[in-house]
Length: 260
Image (cartoon, rainbow, N blue to C red; front, side):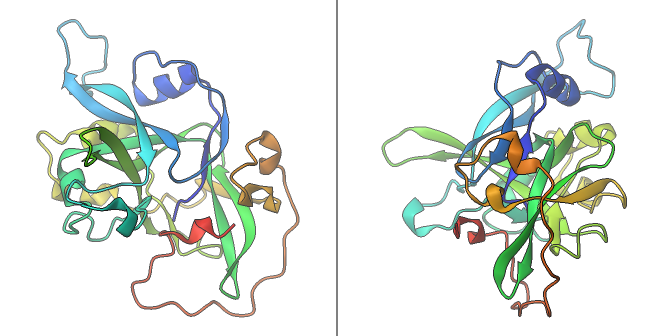
C-alpha cells in the first residue's frame, strides 16, 4: 500500500537520481496525497547522437506531472469509478484497468519515503514514516494513463504499484510500494522492447533492512498538514489485539485513506 508519501529532495537531486534533464524548481513536499500532482519519469525519445547518458540508458527520460489516481482510457463516468492510486502488482498486466499502462506507460515515481498506518480494530492506528535506512531517494514503480475527458481535454493520471510487504513492514501493513533499483531503471522504463513479462521479476518487495519505520504523530492524517513536523518521531500506541478480518484478495490501497 502507498497512500501518502513525501519528496523532500531538491529538484537537482531528484533529476540526477532519475537521469532527467534539469527540473523546474519545486518546494519540499512532506505529505503527498491521492488526487494531487506527482512527479513521474518516463522513457522518452531515442537518445540523441553525442548524448552524455551512460550506455545502459537506451532512451532519454522525460519528467511528467501526473494526477495521482489512475483513470483508464475506457472509463465513461469518473464519478462512478474508484480512485486507483495503487495497483496490485500481482495480475496488473492482465487487469483491464492497468493492462495498457503496464505495456506502454511504465514510470518511476521519486520519493524520500512513504507513510503507513498500523491497523487497529479496523481503524487507522499508529502512523509510521517509512524511509530508506541510509537516506537518499527511492523510485517507486509507477503507471501512467492519459484520460480524455468528455469535453475533449486530456489529463495524465497515474498509480503506484504495490507488492506483499517484507518482514520490515509486515507488522504495520501487509502491502508496500514496489521499489525499482537504480540499475533496473532502464529496463523498467523500456516499453518499446520489453513487455510486462520481461520485467515481472522487478515487482518484488524491497530487500530487508532497506527501509526503517519511524513512528510519527497523527498530524500526517490530515492532508492540510504539509510541514516537516509531520515526520518528527511520535508516540507508539499499543499493538492491536488481533488483526482485523479481511476478505480474500482485499486490498486496503483503494479509498481507505480518505477517512480523515
